[in-house]
Image (cartoon, rainbow, N blue to C red; front, side, top):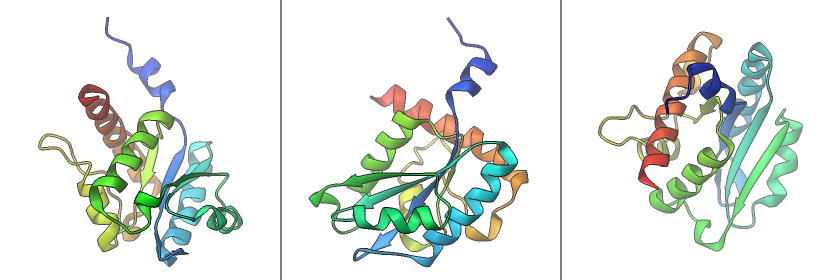
Length: 157
């Protein structure tokens, strides 16, 4: 049975940002993305959620809240102390699969681009948004990409 488009759209909610941290400190782009995500979420009538990945990073969640995150998902594990593509991509994939964001914002840093590429199987577009391209007009473009990636994650599980 094929679900209709409206049923599928109802599953995906919220603007999510990847809150990049290095050595236990949030990068400036992470805070900027939360602010821009908040603007986009307002336009879409939804909330903004930051996904924070690392080891011992729970203490950074309050800062993300101060910058506008309505919710922070903390994925805290010793394996995630330093950025490595595969463990971080796995953590992000599980969060996307579980929470089904409508829009996913990832900064155009070396780490952000690497992480976004980790979601790019041969036939699926990259899950990536540069800080220079944050506008409401692209929200439809991102909803499509998040759904494509979620479909890929579901089919490969």
